Image 1 (cartoon, rainbow, N blue to C red):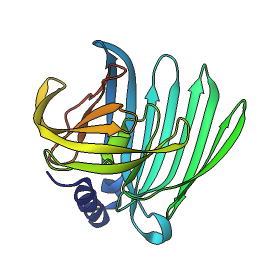
Image 2 (cartoon, rainbow, N blue to C red):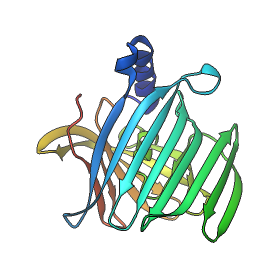
Image 3 (cartoon, rainbow, N blue to C red):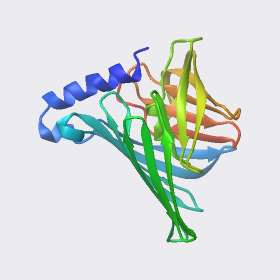
Length: 231
């Protein structure tokens, strides 16, 4: 299976060569969230190429997770090498903003500010690649997690937006698997992310790099793509 970086590099090359109208989205779709077979929410997302910092190409991923209890909006900007550059999220509950988070990454420094009705919190953390920003209810982050070969493990550094704490994790490449997407069998490979506190998250990716399913065993949540990817 190709690495996420080689997949994104290829997509960026195609985007640069394509007409402007064709560059609008590199990926776009939706996930349905279920627990125990019952729908509990939806995720809409889009990924597109951007000029990036100082004219260097990158990616912008935007997503909205909606459940009956709340809505969370995300925006993540990464470099062409998938290194996070900026991150923003807004959590709304009952029609009111409950939390805003804004973060920037400069070299080995993660600088963030979170605002709630109770007050503000600022935090700076040292980071080193590979690292991902793990937002609450953010299912698009798995586009940017390393994808090792079957049976191979890779370490990853993680910043959790919930408490702005840095931790570590291990990604294990799993076997080839078949996932049903909108009633159609889709060939994928399964991966497992195990965080330092023991929490496990699983995600399924097609050979071409499309994310089709995410499972959070601890909470029983399954996020499944609503339409099969084009390739």
